[in-house]
Length: 102
Image 1: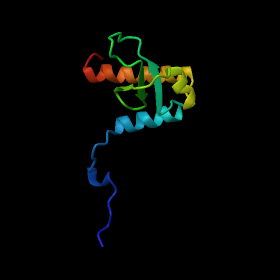
Image 2: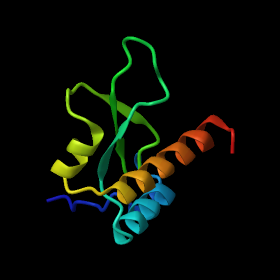
Image 3: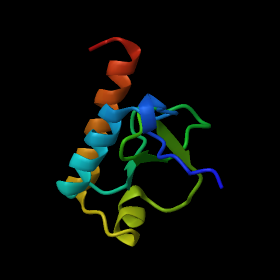
Image 4: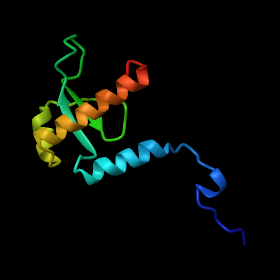
């Protein structure tokens, strides 16, 4: 029977960025939630979503189709204002780095 290898065996890293992994681990230890919701105040176009979701470790912001506010969604998942702001800041920094602006 063939022995199952660990994904990091002999440098076989598949879709794993160690820097992102350790950054995510550090944010978890600091109490930053996995997901938070923010009000979309910067895009005022008619079809823009009112609320955006920010995931820890992701360098993207996702639209949310809801009638609830970001505050109500955050309260439902146990995220306070400071945690949502921290997650939003890390997502925007990741976006800026990815775009080459930083």
